Amino acid sequence: MQPKEVRPRLKFLKWLALAFGALILVAGAVAADLRWFSPLNREWVVNALAKRYQSAVDLKSFNSSLFPSISIAGEGLILRRRDQSQLPPFVSVERFSVDASWLGLLLYPRRFGHVRLDGLVINVPPRHAQTGAGPHPKKKRQIAPFVLGEVFADGTTLNILSATAGKPPHVFDIEKLTLRSAGIGQPMAFEATLTNPRPVGQIQSSGKFGPWDTDDPSQTPVSGRY
Image (cartoon, rainbow, N blue to C red; front, side, top):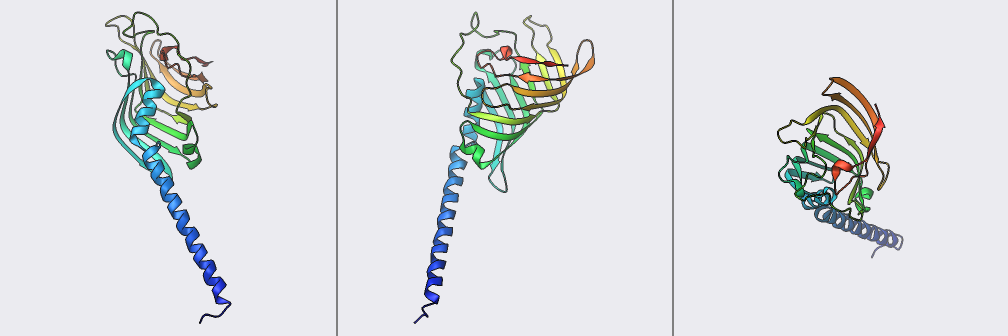
């Protein structure tokens, strides 16, 4: 027979064990939910990018991790506008990496902390260079499925495509590029160091970019100084 003073301690230990067990089960359920129904899932990433940029999305490789920190990475990302299939891909990225917090993944839109893009190439089409005869009517602005905190994209190549067939694009080599979010639906602040093709020279520029124009990306507002 156990002494009376030992019984409360055993009861406490049983409750503590049950509490830890419940926490493990909850953590496992949350982790599984995030793994299969969140940005840690390849399908979610592809669908979110397709919706945000109205593009067909190709992604060569993808991986994600919950521990020791939440991270997402991938290679061979290509975004091609559906109404511009005859043009070069709108965006291509050799490699990317993203970090996020637990709270950021549970909010809507999803919040991501830092995004790093390596080998980013942007091909800006001529205005209204789509299969239709004129510009598409503006649609009601929708809330983007995600918000990016900071984007680092050093070594970006920006090609401004010409409306004249056979004419080469204007190419800008962007040595350094950083964008920072100002909130949902707000333009992102940017800082850039780039090389102007003609006349050749280095440009230091800062300003604001966005909000993103889903219907006609070439009409996305840009303002700043250099």
